[in-house]
Image (cartoon, rainbow, N blue to C red; front, top):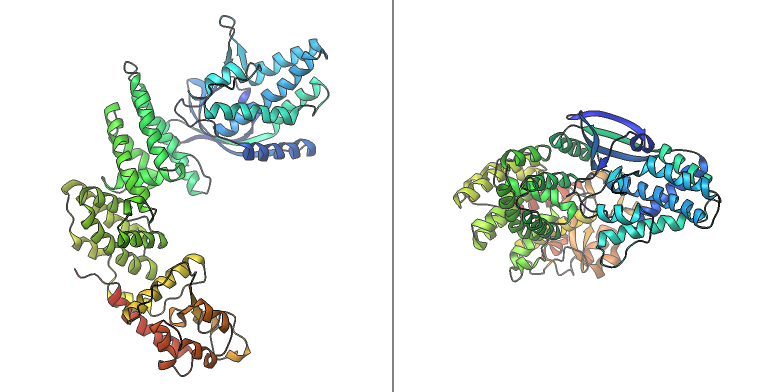
Length: 559
């Protein structure tokens, strides 16, 4: 794996007894675990301890250097911090025994030894703990002053994250109270705990390598907080200008506004699409390098974060058809709904640039074209999304740079009729919530094209999708007359039908079904009994061919 100095699986005790410190970057996110996570971990620990087994805690990504024993925790801070809280809560249980006068001399020595080993030593000058774990700037003060000292935990004038830390400590303190009778048993519990909680420890040499590890692990399904790393880099550039301490507070306000608008799990996506609206497209793996190559000073950082805040409203509105940005713009709202229904993000960079620089009318026209292109390219033909993103990126850069775009550039990714029609004429959609909405959309557009006036609700609350050849056909449909698997989900076998009618049909024969089809308010459904005396593979092929001829006119762009 690129950038990894070392990778090994080892227990928590080997980390904590290594002689170095574990430092959470001061601008890393705050402690955020809550009761659900505390309880999950505790249940695992109880099973591990009762069965005298081991428990795997996942990945711990550390940034290290050859000349320093200390490590920066890139990912795993929530787990690392919580385990330390459990150790401290267990030590507090021993302290309670001392307070009761139980085995005072031995238990006092146990407390000192356990703290020295797993928490930190007391500085002889300041008489403050020099802790092994150093939390971020919002958490470390409370951790060091209150939790580590095992005194009364401050409640008033504390932040939300400090309240969480207090609650976490007290939650584990409650679980451990009375769990063991002696200080020795609590000490044995702590020792067993740290030596049987295992991490896969990944050590990297610098921020760049750490970012590549994030992206590689994400690609393998291990969800890590990659956006945190970028934040740390940006804040480090500003933090280096110590003669302007107010800048950090300003940057924190701007970053908080951004993360408030863009939910944490969407932030990496947003940053990438924002960046690609201005510069040559980069893959997720290369995004950090691209930003680092461009952003090198505090001035660059403020310019970047301010600009991202401007774009964040547009990005979130592109993900939500009901966003207030589209209020009073019904057609745009419906097309945004379709864009998300199709599951497409590739146009985001281009659409963000268009909204910002071209105005709402040009944005509207471009969005309409994107829906047509997306329908042909992705929904029906299933083409490679990377190719279309390259074209969209080129247009986005042109819009950002020149404040214009050439519609003819879209022709490169417009699927022509000679490819679109044959694929559409054989297209099928396996039953799923998303596919059923797409089917209603397609059938609804064909209904309007053939003269129907009824609006189709994509959620299916009123109108349903009728499978003419049923999904579970009985013997009345014949066992050898149909290749069921190939025909049931073909578009030619589907029609729109009022919910009240559909509930009556079930597996009825074609002759019985067409009596109800002829009563439907949908023109395209009433046409079925008029055009097909019997329903077989030839009828399905014929009907879908007619649908494909409609489709090439419905989803069409004139260049």
